[in-house]
Amino acid sequence: MADKPILILGSTGPSGICLLRELLHRKKRVIALVRPTSASKIPADLVSSNPDNLQVVHGQIDDDAALSEAVAQCSAIISLMGPVQESMSSRTPLPYPAFYENHVLPVMKKHGIKRIAVMGTISIYTEDDTAVFLRWILRTGVSWMFPAAYNAMLGIASVFKEEEDIYWTIFRLPMLLGGSDETAWKADREKGEAQAGPVGNAWTGKLNRSILAKWLADWAENEGKWVRELPALSS
Image (cartoon, rainbow, N blue to C red; front, side, top):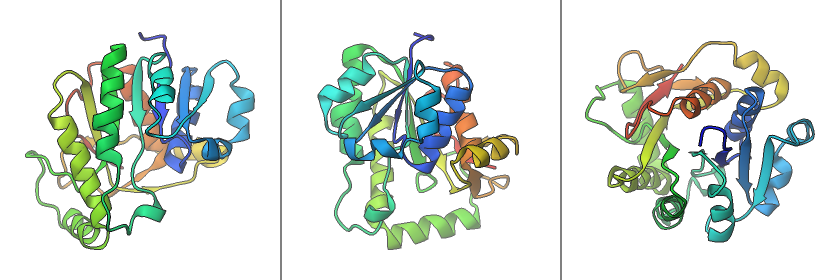
């Protein structure tokens, strides 16, 4: 399984592009499942310089045929899928919890794929977290102003906490900073490492996207790390 590609969901946003750059920099094979209308967002320099290590599969998030094609080839999944700016103010439920429960998890089990890292936010609490005023401000603000996004994050956590057959990790993100172009990624990835663990006094409330990409690439390389855990990441 180790020599099989890593499947990336949500690869066309800034964080997803940083992750593609990091994995390809490490000579990993990568599959990016993207909507046909979003395929052009993958930078041309990545596509042209990695013909053997980057495979792009086109499909919507509820396209089980495309999802199954991608999952069948992979060793692990990293998902950066979540509410985008256009849907943040929505008052209707967002589809992400159902997407994982009704599509991703069944397809993983069908193909015997055990490992997935899923994006969450610090709206999700764990029993090891301690009170931090900045976190309370951010979580309260999101719950009031963006209730659909807030509930989607809680829903994703609920889906995976009930899942005993998959080696899942929910990485809880703070405010993300930094660009995804090659110059920004190269400079930013040298600025340190991500801190991971419960929310506490050392949690800073921010994280550079290139540092996030390094942490996720490390997760992909270390099969026994953060299994069924919800680390909060920050700089």
